Structures are given as C-alpha cells and as structure tokens.
Image (cartoon, rainbow, N blue to C red; front, top):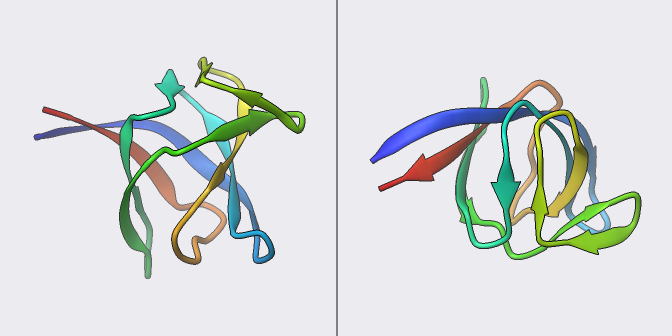
Length: 84
C-alpha cells in the first residue's frame, strides 16, 4: 500500500472530535487516510467532511476541511492518503 501526503492538521476540536486539515492534494469521502505525527499514528476512513460548515463529498488542493476523527490529533501532524 502506498501513502501519499495530502495535507497537514491545522486545528483540533475535542467536541465534536474534528480535525481541521489544510489540503495539499485531493481527498474525498471514502478515502482511507493515515494521520501521523510525533505522538500520533491513526488510520481511518473519511466518513464525512465539511468546508465552511457545508457537507462536501470531495475537496481539492488548497481547501481547508473539517473531518471527524476517531482519536486526538495534533496541529502539524501529516495526513496521508492510503492507496492500494
């Protein structure tokens, strides 16, 4: 499996558990991602994402998105898209 970097964590909200991600590549609902940092290593599937509080199914390079995450992530963590 290949991992391509698609963004960085810009923000984290504990309630609801949401990560703010600045994208450097395209991402869509259903993609498998890995968030990796100094103390973070989280693998998950993107269930939903938002741009400016609006639900979207895909986002492109340069977009800032919000994604529900399963655990705590930290500002500066790298976001990778996992491809088969």
